[in-house]
Length: 341
Image (cartoon, rainbow, N blue to C red):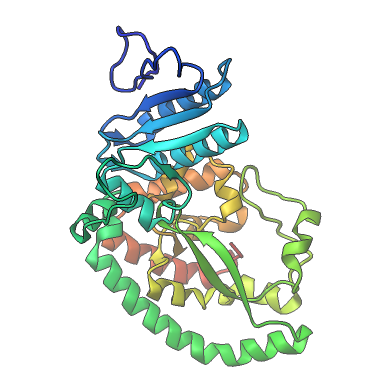
């Protein structure tokens, strides 16, 4: 997907030749029928070139009238382009957004972020047909799998019963230590970057988020981790070592924000540092466990290793593989290698 206004180059992505009066104010970038990782990387680079050009345009119009499919990498490219334009004081407008793409933007709460060019003769925000929902769920087969969802529901119900039993001593221990809140709620990102609130038993001091800047990050890249994080309480250290702090996430699984097995759920500030290819890890729902959990989550020090494990999971996924990872997780939790995510 190469950008140019010359007629002898790739016609899939073309910066249309505006009139002489508008040449300094607007550029139009046409997007091909699919916007996945390869196309998304080239698309993001193209918009960036327009933003850095001199003189820079006042508006960049993203023409999605031919685009029928977009995955997490495509969404990531749109978000990154939006931030780049915003930084440069350039308005980014989406033109001709098809129902399939509009559905994805709506399901991931990104519809509110972008500016849409009104369609002549139609409402500014046309209603989306319910039957289009299945189109948005084809980024990875695990997302649309009824078997996986059934496993999640059954596992979540069993997990919540276990949580109810174990919560009594956990709650007492947390309250006796510092009298603070029992639960910790944090914004994380699910499938395609959709935000949700993850729940845990609190394992840190009450002002942990405010103290985060004072703690050294021992992981390379967007992730944040410190094995000897001073913000962790005595009770919290035990909860993390045994993964008991994560029991409330069975509620997230039951709601559908997470799955029993998937990728590590990132925070919004992590995603802001992602490059386009790294958004691929969001093609599936995040999980309570996964490759990172059973392959030494406490020893992972590089973000590229997390990406590799997440993409390995997507490549190897099957219902049987999910069950295999769940069984491995149980074995890990009862071994000396268990550690906090």
